[in-house]
Amino acid sequence: MRYSYEQLEQWDKEYVWHPFTQMKTYVQEHPLIIERGSGSYLFDVNGNKYLDGYASLWVNVHGHNDPELNEALHMQIETIAHSTLLGSANVPSILLAKKLVELWPGLSKVFYSDTGAAAVEIALKIAYQYWQNIDPVRYAKKTAFVSLREAYHGDTIGAVSVGGMELYHRIFQPLLFERIEVPSPYVYRMSEYGNEQEIVQYCLQQLEHVLASEQERVAAVIVEPLVQGAAGIITHPRGFLKGVEALCRRYGVLLICDEVAVGFGRTGTMFACEQEQVTPDIVCLGKGITGGYLPLAATLTTNQVYEAFLGEADENKTFYHGHTYTGNQLSCSVALKNIELMEKRQLVENVRKKAEFLAKKLEMLYELPIVGDIRQKGLMTGIEIVQDRNTKEIFPRSEMIEHRIILEARKRGLIIRPLGPVLTFIPVLAMTEEQMETAVSILFDSIAEMAKAVR
Ligand SMILES: *Cc1c(COP(=O)(O)O)cnc(C)c1O
Image (cartoon, rainbow, N blue to C red):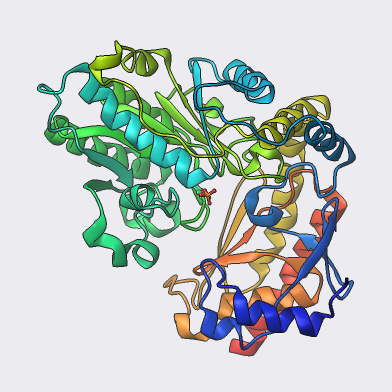
């Protein structure tokens, strides 16, 4: 049975509560209802075609409806869809774990879950329990976590506890555990601190100050390596991540790197940590891990962390955590195939080349007076929209300028999303240069339209 757009629209508005969405405004507009996908394109139920400029929320790697990923999934589903990892094993989860450990020098163990937020939640609980397992008396006070200003690590309560975004996180404050905030190098809005390197130095000094005085209470530092995605694609200058790692080592706290957004080729290397030769104690993976096919996430740890959890049955060192679908075979088999295809298709090298191409194309957006800053790392792009280039003042939220720009882009065949005043262009990783060129010219026209309207 095929339903009409009107029927689906009515039921969507009647029954579905959308995430991160003000439903009062949502129901006043006509929703985009996606029916199918192919390569870098999405098609709605009316047959309109759009470039997927947000990689279906930063997850899609090889494009939609990839024949080889489809085949891997078909083969798995004809074998078994799911059995539990609690007390038993399964084939795809073993092979994927082996592959992930091979990709991550220094990390040895894989703990599965199904969303990025859960991977973070697990990392935080492991970090806390690690110290308790080693010495519950000596480390009794290690209950706090350090994270960056504007940090985003997901939406469950533990992940929100280490979050630093006013808009999303403030309301839940009374429910959260302790977080110590340190500044992150948001170069565009920190010019009073000097040049890039001086800003990095300032941020690292602040972190050092916190660790020197609070070391006893800090279980771990958690960061998004190289790029803070949800905060508005805040790209960190070279040296910051390495500096954070060095401070964690000096003050004896664990380092958790949340690679949920930046992992799997997004920043031009398989993992962002590679670019500064950083080896965290714990890593969180998600989003692109299955190529955008199925929900799956993983938390990886070093052997040192893992060994702190080994003990006799009555020692209570077990990590009592698990989700019903942990290690699901369909997700793990498509993830393994995704990684194999990334290697076979030399996707990461291609991302680096295409990122250079994209950077050149994006420069033309600076011709538009409301474009304040363009930030890019690999195929992760943020375009900050301002009212005034000199003061860097943003438009009042009530004007919904960025929302209006993305609607303009949609009319022209490109789907993107804003994050506050920042338009993000996070294409399917396999998007061609030609398609990216089209996307940038749609971006240009859509922003130009709005620049005219507000003048
Ligand atoms: C998206 C994201 C998460 C949360 O992942 P979900 O799968 O949405 O729970 C966590 N950390 C970072 C850096 C993210 O970008």
